Length: 142
Image (cartoon, rainbow, N blue to C red; front, side):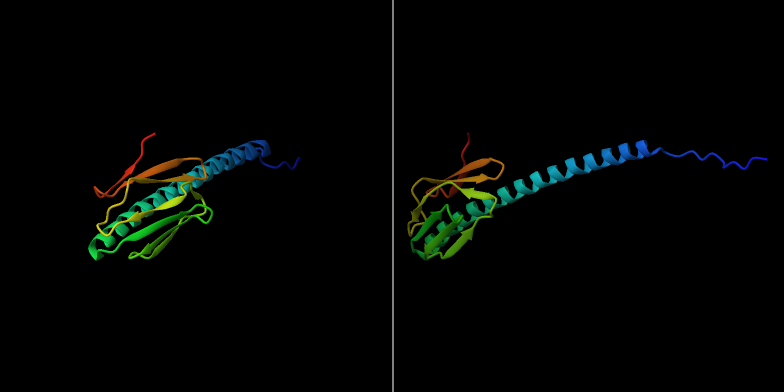
């Protein structure tokens, strides 16, 4: 009498490794896409913050009848508001400030037409045009 093991149907080692490889590849692709999406959110948030802070500085100058200055520091990724509206705006490390110089906000809340260029790590950039005489911030096209 022979003592045999009953045959059990199962996946072979090669089939298991192939399935694991496919799962790892799909997970890696998902992780990379998530990181790109997070970078995009950080960039869009920084752009919104610059827009809102510039508009607040202009409104503050108008309401308080006190002029303000805005100075851009590309090396430190900082925008400083001085005068009536004292605030420092620090951009995330993944966002570059491409514009140098600054602008003065009059006591009427007006600024000369000016622009600020921001660039994300992935190369995406945006140029914000400030036309504060009309109280608007416009994303430049192109």
